[in-house]
Length: 330
Image (cartoon, rainbow, N blue to C red; front, side):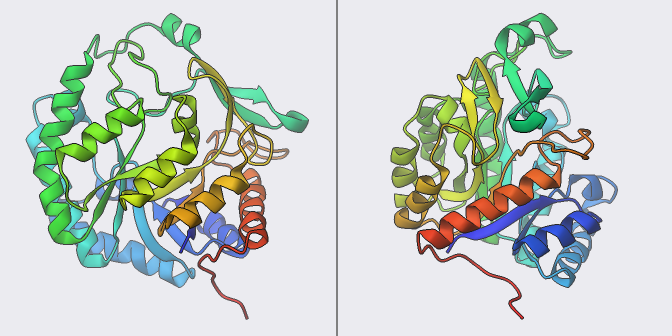
């Protein structure tokens, strides 16, 4: 069944407690800051401590997100990429041993998810992020200069050839996130995961169950894809392992984020689609507005907007009779 999740870092005590109080049962954890400080021989013990922290809070440690260890040299095809792959293989094995089955990763080289503004006024003056391709062009090239799409494709294939067999043996599902925003090039760097056809190409590289998708719904919507059709197609193949639920208004070239209940997509209807298509995994509310009284130092990740999103999602699931994992009920 659907597992309501949220993204945490180890030590996010207040955020974890608030999320559990709001009904979150599963933790997706950003482990890179911790694992960057230890040798690969200590990945297993470090991840066990993370699992203990989440369990003590009443959460299932369900997955990791944003690369558990660095992969930037692999993405860019730089010297040292094989060392990064060895670290990645070690962390996949450690995740499997700890019992963490979902690894959300991306292939946005040089730049991660990217916005040109983070202070756009939404409903009632809440702050959201947005993107304008003209503003991005004015930023110019990054330090990496121009990199074509085929180079990025080759680097991804090199990585997957090395890690997917290991993930399969470890029982870890690799869930690839689309490029956000789905435009190419972005400041000179080719972005390859900008269409459903690109994901079909990735799925075709390795047919095994370790190779899957993080379905970031708003990003696929910005591509102009039929979200419902993709949910049915990829859930039918058993390849959607993780869902990011959010909404945006605009086009891939110019858009802004919205509240979960204030965008153009009927999110309640898409939740019903996930259920009907047989989705079985973690689903988290993605970027939410920064609301009154909150700092905007982590745009999209303040908690008041997330609480609204969690309540909205739970209400939609209950109203539609959709079962989902529940926590403490005493």
